[in-house]
Length: 82
Image (tube, rainbow, N blue to C red; front, side, top):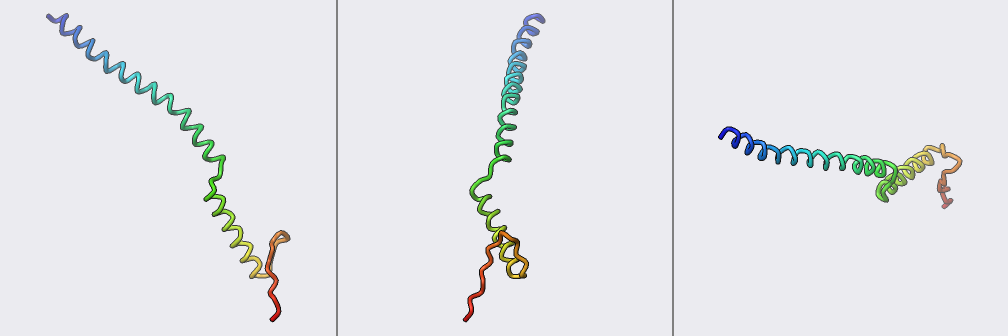
């Protein structure tokens, strides 16, 4: 009787070990995908990020023009005489 209980317990617990091993294998497979995804995201710029960067640069250029200290590449508007 004891042998039957031990055999049944081994079969039932064996499923837990297999399920745990499968979960671990799936987690290990997800890691490289997450790393590559993070690298691509860091290396590329979205359109909204590019727009924000361009807006910041335009505001900085306008501020330099107002202060009278434009950089050589700045396109400051010359005030029109009235």
